[in-house]
Image (cartoon, rainbow, N blue to C red; front, side, top):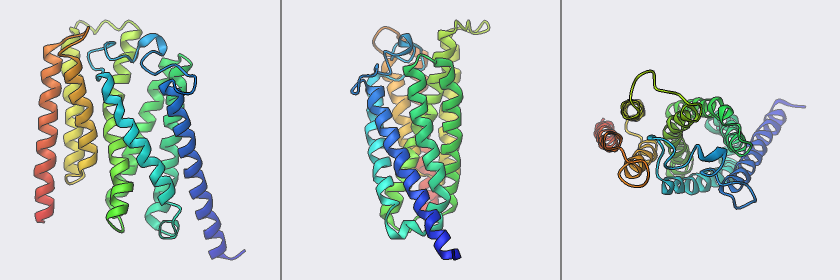
Length: 265
């Protein structure tokens, strides 16, 4: 078999793996929503991930962003089948990392569905690491056109930004469920600290990504819903709400300023 033939076969395998992984992730999302017979995520694991379970938990409406992310991932799965992407070095580098993120996403949902809350932590940390790797790859391999930038960079950026917030919320939920007492620090103090770190991560992404919008938008979406959830409902916290709101302003400001500087060269 000639080298070009082997290469074409390898490209097709990659495309099929990505497409299959996207289908698995979408099926997992239906299970996680309760639409396919599973328990809705907010009700699974004894409600550990409910909007009022911890001071870091975003309000329930925050999770509507998954609809946009999943739509983008399915669009990417189709997009990467087109001839230009089949032989693109950019998509060759990205393909299996994208597939890994999709499988990890489904695995995270299954861990919650089977009440293995502790297992969700290493899974979401691995997912965050994979998405961070994707972010770096995309930064160093420019899109061919605007559509590629929107479908690929935009979708993966939204995915990364949201998972940054989800990771903080997930770890907090596991610690609270396990009875973590805070090592002498009050819950409000921990909330302020964790939310400040989440905002710092958003600022770091903005600076490193030269003002990429999509990670900042989804990260700020998550922080904004934390702020909303802490101003009403059963778990009110003014310190957490203020920290989350300040984080939103800080991340957006740094992103916009950095992007303007990048455009001006």
